[in-house]
Structure formats: C-alpha cells, structure tokens
Image 1 (tube, rainbow, N blue to C red):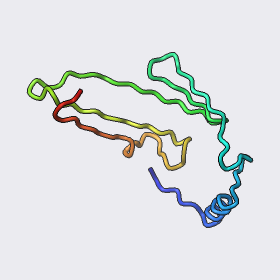
Image 2: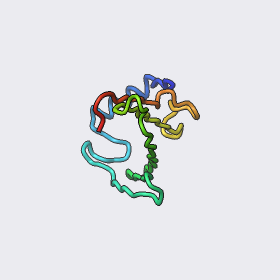
Image 3: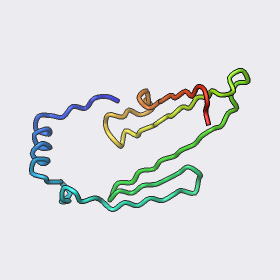
Length: 109
C-alpha cells in the first residue's frame, strides 16, 4: 500500500472535528449507520451495507490431503485483494500486503 500523507490543513481539520465531536454526516459520537448483511447466491459471497457504503466479500477454500510423510501438518494461505476505490493507497493488481501464510505443525484438527 502506498502512503498518502495528509496535508497540514486536512490533519488540523480532522483533529478539530474529533475534539469537537463533530462528524461530516451529522451523526453524534456514538451514533452508527444502518447495517444490513445479506448473502449472495454463490457460496461464500456476502454483501454488507453500512449506510450508503456497500462492501462485497468472497471467501473460498480448497482442501488438500497432507503429504504422506507429514500427515499431521498443513498450510493455509489467506489472500486479500483490496480495490483502489476503497483508498488511494491500494494499487490495482498489487496485493503484496494482502498475502498471509499460516503453517500448522503437529496435531491439526
């Protein structure tokens, strides 16, 4: 993710708004937006609406038998792709920060 630093004016504006407990949309400090969660027609697909913001998530997995010489070990990969529409810091096709790796050794159940 590339850095997108705030200008001094933006930083000052945000700090003043936090100090005065003001939000641009008129909500109070502990007010929350309407939340709606719905599931898509495909397995692993989910839509979340937070006020006027809509997010789609897709989850998938593949089960693979462990190696015969290491029957109690396995590997899990997590890959996250974030759209540049979410933040200017996310670059299209570059998810170097979005790959996580976890290895399970010993008793995996």
